[in-house]
Length: 215
Image 1: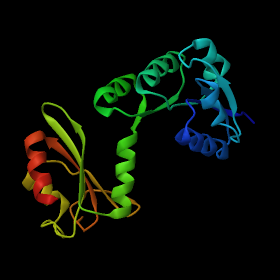
Image 2 (image 1 turned 30 degrees about the vertical axis):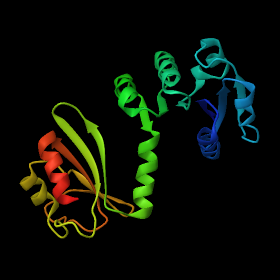
Image 3 (image 1 turned 60 degrees about the vertical axis):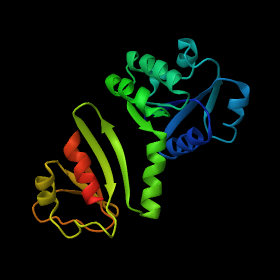
Image 4 (image 1 turned 60 degrees about the horizontal axis):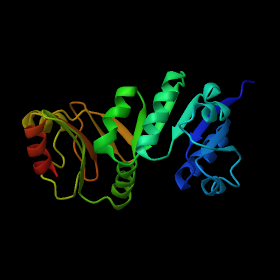
């Protein structure tokens, strides 16, 4: 049976958990640390640990980048971006980067076709899930378009209204909602409930007005 390989660049508390997850799912995992102190964090992880400059292609080859189906990048954003370019040029099928500065780096990763996960967004999403407050977060913005993630509070005036009707009146798109563990595509009969998580997309002015009303 063919062994699936994965390479993790950067060793820290998050990447150690990712390594264990990959191993538990049948991957042969290698990790690259930039120094010996970082490498010590990988002790106890069932993975091969290499020490060196992760931007050095010989180090990456030694870590198995050419054989890896998955590369996970968990260093500073600039290093992640440089290694992502190398991994992309070597034909790695799946590249995932954990990024700290979404405003500065997210577009660059997206243009490369990299799966970029803003660390702050992931944390805020979990906080919203567990605390279930009224909550809104800007996901994307440019000169014309905005996208928001909104958790509906129990005080929202739009509770029990049809999602498509609300979207039409606001002049936006609400393509799906998350309700509990379910992802639901909007349809004519879907109504808004307290605690629903809505994705709202459209022209910037319309989205801002809709979010302020629905929130």
